[in-house]
Structures are given as C-alpha cells and as structure tokens.
Length: 268
Image (cartoon, rainbow, N blue to C red; front, side, top):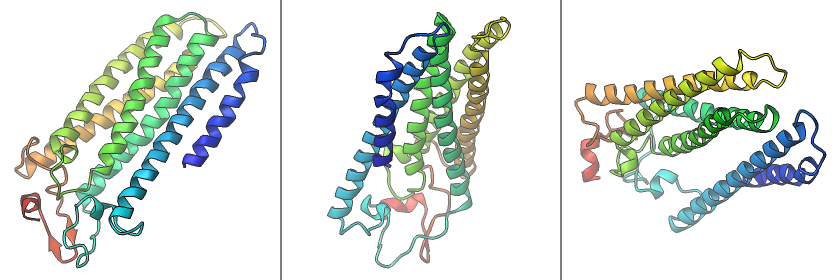
C-alpha cells in the first residue's frame, strides 16, 4: 500500500507543472485541476507515510516477539497461554461493532473526497464563495479525523483482556458521540449553502457538489449516533458502566475452550 500511494502521489504531483502553469480559462478549470491535484497528491503522500510507519511498527514489534508469523494480538499481550489456545469465532456483538466501525471508515473516506472536491470547485471554479470554501474545508478536516479515529478504534474493538484507554467503552462512546454532533453541525452548514447555491441560475453553480456532501454528512451523523447508542445500550444492558468497562468485555469472547470476561482480565 505504501508503494501504491507513493506512485499515486508522484503521478498527481508531477502533473501539477502542467495544470498549475497553463493559462487559466474563463471558467477557471485549470485552477480547479491544479488545486485538486495538489490536494490529492498531498493526501496520497500522507497515506504513504502512514502505511510505511505502520509497516515498520508491525515489523519491529513482530521481530521482538519471535518473528513475522506471530499473532498481532499476542504481541500486545491480549492472548493468554497463546501456545495452548486458539482464537475462537467472532462473537455476534463484536461483529455488529466491527461492521459499524468499518462502514464509518468507508463513508469517512468517501466524504473526504467529496468535501475536498466541493471545496476546490467552490474556490477555483465557482468564484469567490467564502462560506462554501470554509464549510467544505471543515468537512474535509472532519472527515479526515473521522476515518482516522474509526480505523484506530476498529483495531481496539476486539481486545477484551487489556485495560488501555483505547479499549474502554467510554472512549468509544465519547468519540462517536462527538463526531456525530460535529457532522450534524456540518450538515446544517451545508444545507444553508445548498439553499443559496441551488436557487441560483449559473453554469458554474457548486450545487451538484454540495448535495452529495450534504447527504454523506447526514449518513455519517446517523451512523455515528447509532454506533454510540449501541455501545451505550450494550454496556448498560450487561450491567457495566462506560467508564470502567472494556468495549468488548461483555461480548463473550472465547479462546479455545475458555470463555473469559472482563472481570477476569486482571488475573490473566
């Protein structure tokens, strides 16, 4: 993945010397392509750096733990008596959370692209539309934050035997609740621009770019809210509290013939 993103970044950035130096047409299309290419190229290089860092992190931790064939969970201290046990099938509650987290991750990436395109179009093609550019920039940054946090929490979604802050139900609930409220605010911002821009008769109207971004903001708001509600209700139903419970504590995780719960993790 690191090599692929590096290639994508190089392709987009090398094209900038043509798109950013060409004459600007009456519709500013060269400027739009220049801005979009620079943004995509920068994001591709960022993903390349993140992929490279993740690769080296996994490599060094694995080498210290006995080689690349070791289980990642074992390296983090999540599996007890690893040589005697095998990871069991994923519990249904874990499957629900994993599905929700994964969908949020995918929609966050999609919104990152839509919001970025809407911002570039409003700034370079449609002319000086300061509110649209500001709202689009906020959506771009928030979507970047959304899929990064979703990917991090997804990796700590099935670790019922450790007590790190990233495994606590309160952390997952708080992050998804805050993101849901953020996307609600951004959706309202977008709606104000849709009402203004879609009522104007203009060939360069940014309305077609803001309708999908607004719809995606609504979807993310609902998905994040549902995920936060599921975590809260699941924890309360099983008699736990958000502040003291592991997010996967009551999933009924099995390792081999053992079924361990959060109360046993301190004895592991």
